[in-house]
Amino acid sequence: MEFVSANNSFACEVREHALWEPADPETQKAIRNAYRQHGVLVFRRQAMSEPDLLTFGKMVGEPSLYAEPHWLSTVPEVILLSNMRSQTGEMLGGLSNKALTWHTDQSYYAEPVTGCFLYGVELPLEGGATRWASLYDAYETLPDELHKVVDGAVGTFSYTARSASARKADDNHDWKRRLRETPDVKHPLVNVNPATGRKALYVDPGTVTGIDGIPEDEALDLLDRLLAHVVRPANVYEHEWRPGDLVLWDNAVVLHARDAFPNEENRLVKRMLVRLDPTNHIIPPAVH
Ligand SMILES: O=C(O)CCC(=O)C(=O)O
Image (cartoon, rainbow, N blue to C red):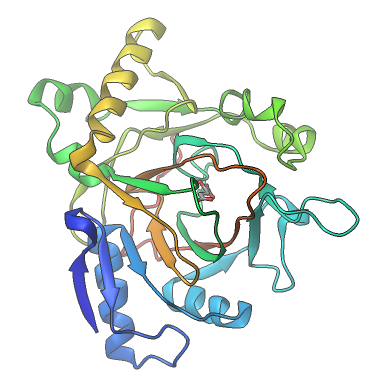
C-alpha cells in the first residue's frame, strides 16, 4: 500500500490496496491515520458490492442511515445519488444532475455525522466532477486579522436557508418533513482536532446565516471572504470520476462541490455516512 498526494493537493491517494479484500489491523490503522491527517482519501479501481461498502464503512466508523428513506439501497446504509429513473419513472436516488455549490454535509444538525464516502458506479462522459477544499489548510493560512475574528466565533447554521434554492428543483427530497425536523443550530466557526490539536475552519456557504455578535451585513461579508480563501485553486482537489473510484472525506475538515452533468447521461454513485470516533476526529459541537 502506498500513500501519495492526489494531483499534488492536500488529498491523499491510497494505491496498491484492494478495499474488497480483508485488511489486517496494521493496514486498517494506516488508512484511518491517513484519513485523520488528510481529510480526503482517494481509492481508484475498486470492485465493491454493497456489503463490501458496509464493511469498509465499519472500518472507518459507524455507518449511519440518511434522512431520506427513498434514497436508500438494498443495504440501507447505502444511499443512491443519481439522475436515473426506475422503469416506472421514479427517481432512483437523490440530487439529480444539478450542480452542487460548495457545502459540507450535515452542518445543520446539532450532532453532524461527518464521515462520508462516494463510490462511482456509472459516470457521465462530461461533467459531474467533485471538488474538495481543506478547512485545515484554510485555517492555517488565514491572515492574522481573520484568525482574531473567527477564533471563538459562533455561527448559525440553517437548513431552511440551505435548502431554499434546492427546494425549487425536483431532486427527490421530502422537504416538508425535513424542514419540520431541522431547526437552526449553532456551531463554532473554528474546531480543534482532539487527537492532534490541529484547528479547522467550519464554514458552510448558504447554510451559515449569521455570526453571534456581528451585524448581519458584516457577517455575510466576512463569510464571503472566508469562502474565497477556502476554495482558492491551490486549496482544492478535483476528482474526475471513473467507475470503481471511492473517495472518503471528513465533513468537519473539508468543503465539497459538484459540477452539473447532462441529464441525457447516466450517473450513479453510492454514498455512505459514517459516524466518526470523537477522540480522533473533530465532531463540530452544538453551542446553546
Ligand atoms: O455527487 C457528488 O459527486 C457529490 C454529492 C454531494 O455533494 C453530497 O453527497 O453531499
